Image (cartoon, rainbow, N blue to C red; front, side):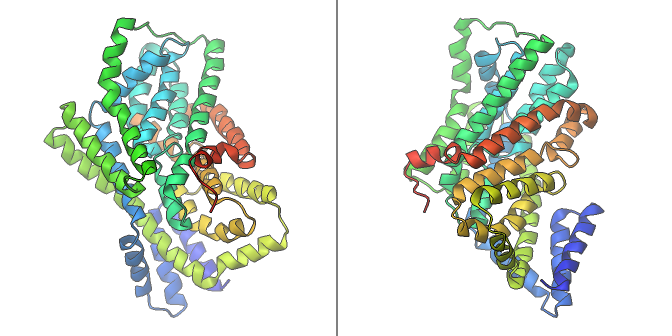
Length: 431
């Protein structure tokens, strides 16, 4: 590896440290490398254009973001909340259980942890802290932890990006995320039950049984969205990218059906979607430049040769990857790790015979833990900014959920069936 590559990486980390937007930092440091090595700096633009405009899978990202934003500005989230309240509200600590269950249901529609936290998560926090029934820190911490389910249970924006860099089936990745997503929700609800008993959390007022059909009926059209979307993917009716378009159309139809999408709200949705999509696209654009340079330097080959020389077994390699990603996840943006670091590891993953779907889901879960781990933890900042709850309150209450997720990560890593059982049942053969 050349001195220019190390200088590029140094420039990138320096720019990120002084809070230059990650996408600009990646593109700028990439241009610096091209200039230092005497190459045409226009190669950066060429790589960006070829990457963004020839990758059909990437189109799913802004479409899923749009669908999530439509649901957040309409009453869809309120109806889902009421439905989940009917199911688990009677348990001690009922609203905390509702928080987790709504995140699981909403994750089948958005694929984004931030969309979950900013939409239905904020609604639940407001309910939980009313009249001081739950501490502010606990309400925010469980909201951040449950929002992590969003990118694990299908559909999942990070899995779409992983499929883009690894040439893996998006459909099988989505299937692989089903059991881990449900398992994470179950573990969190078990943790809530234990804390609720010790702290004597309140039980919500019982909803009369005669109201169950009405509440379920109001939520039913929204609950059908993941069924339509995932059913279409696995029946072969449309591709995952086309499913994102179907999700967007279905979200608009729901909003019109519920009569809650005004022109002003629709404009807000478009603006927020453009803003969020541009942030992701900018990071992906920088990743294309980075990956072009790394490929030219044969960094992945050198890394694979070094790891091979260490004669690591599968379990040792996966342990090393998990430790590195858990540490880096405390500081680096998850998208950058996914688009820049994962391609470096793929040659070794293939050489060791590790299943790419299993590896992809493990990596996504690993990076999602980083969203709630101090000091960077994007979700911690999002929820703190939305609610005004101080970071130290959230962090103090959040460690239990981090350790539960780490325990699940270990189990998933060394018991591949947790990830691959559903894909195997639907015909996946690992090829």
